[in-house]
Image 1 (tube, rainbow, N blue to C red):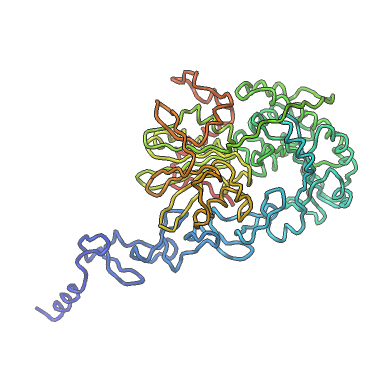
Image 2 (image 1 turned 30 degrees about the vertical axis):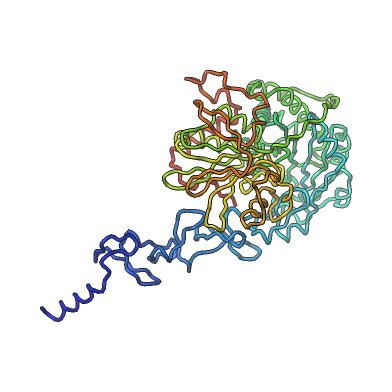
Length: 582
């Protein structure tokens, strides 16, 4: 035997014969070495860091909390708010302090769009929007009249409206800032003129129509491009005021009729595209992202050049609002709405006042189900219609625990319908939100991620109002209560802060308080936090659904949501389904 062969044998004797990670025999041609500890392992157990590309053993890699990727500890970033581990693809940097922040904890300045962490975000007093420190200093948050708010709250079927008056140029700032019908003002990224501002009116009743017309008639803009400004209208949201109904109202107007109402979606739709089923964002004609109003973004600027159209526009909105309010959901066909929309309305109408509405104490609804159990489609529609401000589902399958959530209920329902068998075979936690504290957006949509000191992780949802936690790091009382619970500062089992249910990393479902078993699909048992949603008359179980297109009995908005869900499914869904918004 040569000296070279002896050297080789000695080297082979020093090499571990089995992989320390999986105990499988090591092969010389398939052996990896950890970049940190230099330990040997098989190629299957060695994994590359998604950031730097070096190979590491499992003990020197961490899993990104926002995606399935692994990252070494040298490359890992940590969310400054919640401490989650983030890979390069999932982390963003706060534009104010340069700290890393995860998708769940980050905010975006309403005015300039800067990314903000929880420490750097600033909140206006009443509009529930996030701002950076620089933009908030140039704004006055809308201070709505308590008396107007009281009158509106005490009359369930009273029409109220608000205007956003954008002015792209020089104008009499003091007159508008000090006017009794102006509640607040701020800068706006779409107004390039240095003197441009956006003004928000107070809550307006029909008795204010003459006064707001007089104010608009007095506005004169000195600028090169005043037409860059818009005049969005916010109509009061109720259960019967759905974005899809308002979509069909706008769809029923001809170009001439729309122009007479100072609407621009028929000829210049850069900021107000009329899209069926897409009711979020700053470029849609109908915006459904506000908790208390539906925003009609189609209107052009309001000033002395357009004031003659304001009275007609307000009367049109008043008439359509009354028309929708007088018809229960599912009673109107799209053709009915489109025929009604062009009807000329010029005469003032008396205000309709009804007795004060009984206050709902059960906000939102939580649903849990074990494998093999599902709610009926009718139950899903009822829950969604009575809790329209966001829906999310967490479920456990062979690949682990997943979550999908969206402030647009249609999209979540579309995912559930398109993947019905998947969810039926999995334990899941489902939540429909009725917003009380916090804006209608992804970050406030349940269920929320949690991590306990004993190592348990999962998702948790809340039903009710956590009165003890309405003020805190977040505008959402639910998020504040769950944060306190994670750190051992809150007991969520006594029922004083509402009802909570969770699903952990192994798919175990636990109700902290408030479980109520009911019958679901095919006589299976599901568990809900309340049945208030069942008191609103959406009983669709009398329909023969065999061979019947369920979309025909849906509110028309759900058709597009279902189609979008099917398209996403065909294109290949990924485990992390939650949309990430800047």
